[in-house]
Length: 141
Image (cartoon, rainbow, N blue to C red; front, side, top):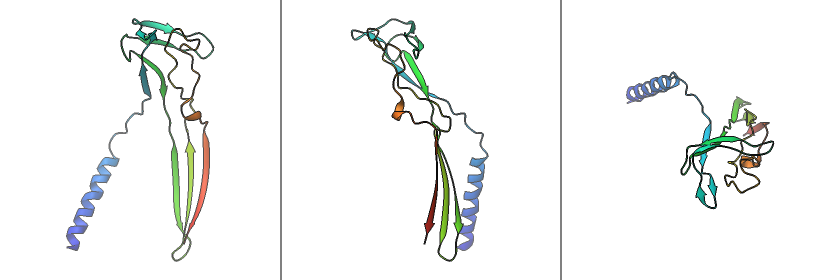
């Protein structure tokens, strides 16, 4: 019985090692589609630009979800260590970094051509957190 358990554990470790050696995947930004409208009617295909300092230019292929807004990337990281501090006691140390890329992620702009905010980037996802870091210590007993 013990040999069978050891054999399955070795097999599981081999499978984990094979997965760890797989080629890394490339992280791509997410593009959120939206549609251009005037009076509820979709606008024809073409290139559209907004007015103002934070305006963007987009290519509309026409139809519903024919244009894509600004991309969205957020990368958060956490690292931690557990140290033994005596019999039945541990000390956990951890560090968190939020928004490692420090990138502003904008919500899709207004796509109604009649609006004064047409294609202006005005709102951030989730309040637009800048890069932040925090450290923590936990005593377990």
